[in-house]
Image (tube, rainbow, N blue to C red; front, top):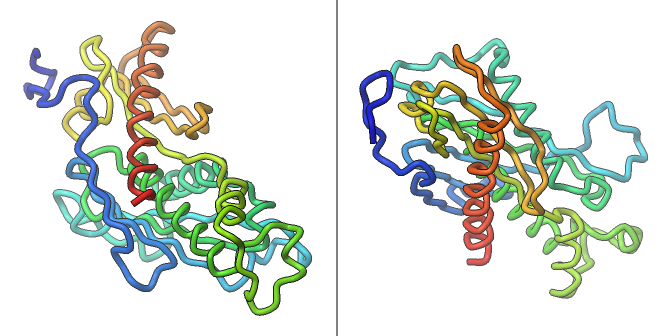
Length: 267
């Protein structure tokens, strides 16, 4: 491999994603939590159930809502990142909206029912791809939370909700699986890809990202559909063929993420 513009040499092959480690229920108080490591990027994703739907929902709402918040912890970067005490800044708001709409794209809010969930994505260590890692981690935590809401009789099929008194209804195993698949038909994940010296690399860490002529974030659901594609030339342009190559590499890497999510939750 040749050296990049800053003089460093990549340590991974172009299509190799970083090692992933997942710890479920890392914190005890959340409905579901995931400590997610992708290389040296570490995310703690926690799901909590809110007491009520957002105020702007109608009183008789039958569907739910999913909100997300994102934060870089002070020691997550090489110089201390100051806490955003006066509200989220522009970049943070952009990422929060991306994470939230990516999660909502994987969920049928009517099947979820009048339940509001909040997913907090806290970056414990940042080494590139934090928004993508947040989406992938949050997707795992969200499915785990939905499983638990169903098992506790809180999230039920529409036709069974009127029967429910103090969450006493318990679905059979088959009914629970069917309802989970109705609420969250597909998994959701995200990956970064980049164009460096004419070559496509997947899962950009900080060094790869800082050397990229083009960087792109791809969000997809496990049925092969796109939620969002964010691609930017860094003082460079790219052709339609290069765009296709970036997307193809991203889709291939995404299949590994979906397989990982399924494996983690099956355990």
